Image (cartoon, rainbow, N blue to C red; front, side, top):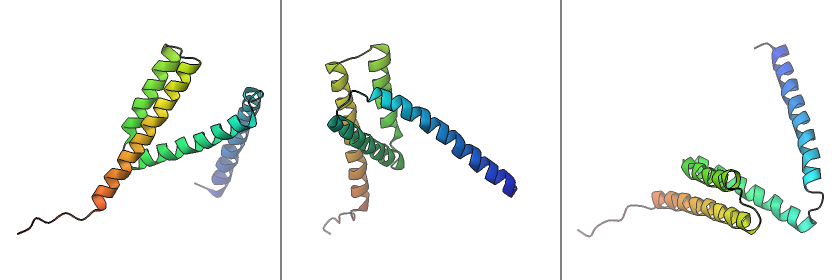
Amino acid sequence: MSPVQIVLSLFLGYFLAFIAAFFFREWLIGWLHEVTLPVAILTFVATFGAAAIVHILVARGLGGIIAAIAVILFWSFVIFRAEGATAIVILVLAGALLVVGVVAAMTQRRLRRLPASRTPG
């Protein structure tokens, strides 16, 4: 790859990311127009927490948990059109499943680090 191609590809990549971010920002402002500040902050924190949890699960090779939760959310919201209190319960259960997956991954890691027990001889 020549230096011109590298610079051009970086420019086009960042330009497309800028356009996507601009339109996403406009959509997000319209969507959050009537949301209170505490709800927006909690949503922001929950999103970062979910991203960290997904990163841990993928790094530990437990992507199947993420796929199972995605199927549950898809069926609940798209197929069955869950709304209101039911949607909140489904989101809480999906979050709990993610946390259980992370606890399982961390427990698995901790158990691998422990020395093997010796039997008295």
